[in-house]
Length: 103
Image (cartoon, rainbow, N blue to C red; front, side):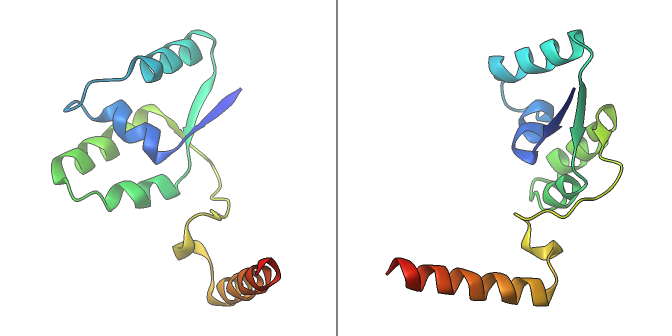
């Protein structure tokens, strides 16, 4: 089984300046012991590169190598920068129409 690690999991796993939560440590231990694969989406690199803490950013990017990156870059619906203008326009139009229906 593959587990997709989001940026909100990757940073706390690799940030040695904060205590590692028991739940994260147990998750990684159990996943590894049961031969599951921990993967991350390439968009996580974009998120980590926006970290204003230079040392943490470099450290986290370096430590990503211990995980498997998804081989292809599927569209990231929660990341607007990866959506082309036309799709974003359609999304906004749909969202406005849905709001009008609710009101």
